[in-house]
Length: 476
Image (cartoon, rainbow, N blue to C red; front, side):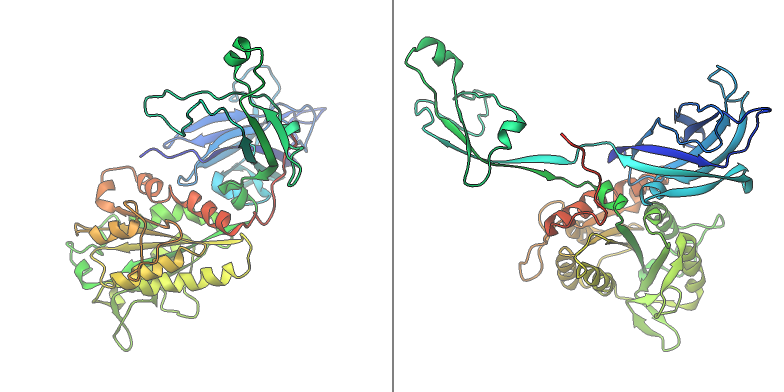
């Protein structure tokens, strides 16, 4: 599956206190943007050159396509340009910086020190990047009424053979339409051109009345993210006995000599993308289906770091480290219950929703090896969660039959609870890992995260909540 471009963004670049490489004058800086294209750096765009300036504010914006579900590694390089050649190899390097596009768009202002080499600062120079989505977020909503339309013409919304009948046309512009307000409509005659030519007595084929014309803002995923919405990432890991003894090479929890298994790959794949949208990078991680010390009772909601009061791990590496450390300390057991962890995250999402702002969204990744045991309770938990700022990703590892997971996905119809209550929106995405074993590692994240942007937007639209920080609205 190819990644879907969510939008295009333009990046504004400002530098401060650049190195001075010229004798008798100041440097003439230019900034170049490169993208990591499968292990090699490819130039995307570059700014103009500014003469004799150590604090440049480049006017040319750098353009880049934005994909939420991909880690887009960027490199910014600043050079002192003293010739007319487009090549940079013969120009002085003033400093550079690497980051991801996700880090930039999730920050209102992204500032980093410039480096001459990795870990070696370029004097006291800094680079600041700000992002802006290239699009017009406005939509025009019209309330239209017609009267005395030509009775001889049969109108229909759709003719399968394409033989649609013309009633008539009229021309206008937005300025005229905006004169329509509630209680004071703007009217236009609907004219059929052929009838007007043939009949001198012809006046019109009816009247179109524009009752109201409102320009509203249609906010995008980037509007919410760049407006301050944090995406909170939580992981739930299946430690049921069907995974097999972690010490056995046949176990799904067995860590191979190269340090990976399917659980770890799924955590890295999804987490490496989502982590850029959470400023503190503290992620709660839980296990379920295991007997946990010291009482050895089965738990379906235990902190991966064994600290129930503070289940947060520092970054994706923190989740990986906690997972590795806990494997020898627990006993895999059962059954496979999802609802406790879903309800756990839902409680935080519900608390956030009470603030009535688009400031927090929650993504839960569940990695499991088998059939779900508490299907009815999980259906209810998902239906409840569909009313909250929350999405659920389920990755199935191993060779089990995942029909129940596909049912929860809801792609073949609206998921309903046992009592028949439908989900308010589709929030579950399920994929079996086996489909991606021979694919590039980023392929998994591209599939499982592809739905998150529209799920986030659909929730906030349903609530009628704008971004915390509103984007600048361009004038018509």
